[in-house]
Length: 110
Image (cartoon, rainbow, N blue to C red; front, side, top):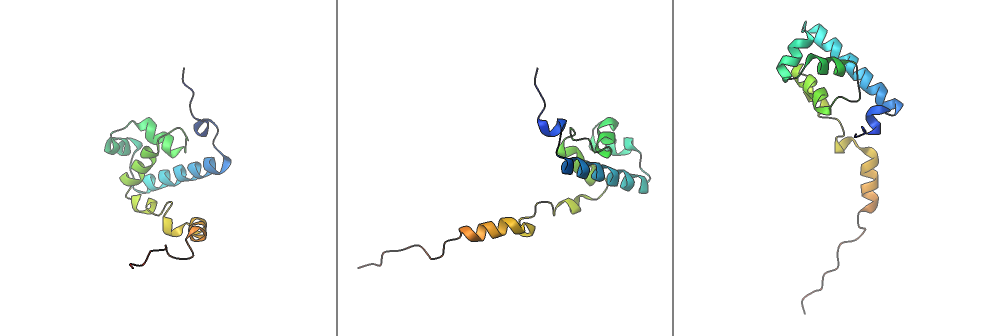
């Protein structure tokens, strides 16, 4: 019997909160478009239970399902900014600290 990863059983509170908020936002977007859960499921080729679980923000649902619902609702472009290296201020600072302070030494021809 295999065990599921901890992140799906007991995610950090911040992860759980953002998944729940994302699910709510996707539900509102679907309702504004007057679409049924089944309409989204048909477009994705998945079950209505998967779409319902996305809207509930369940952590055990695949990332592909979340992105699929975004795509089906025409909201996938917003996801493009997630983890954008240009917006990763901490990563950019750490990278700049590791940059060499002088160029490599080359031997001059004799």
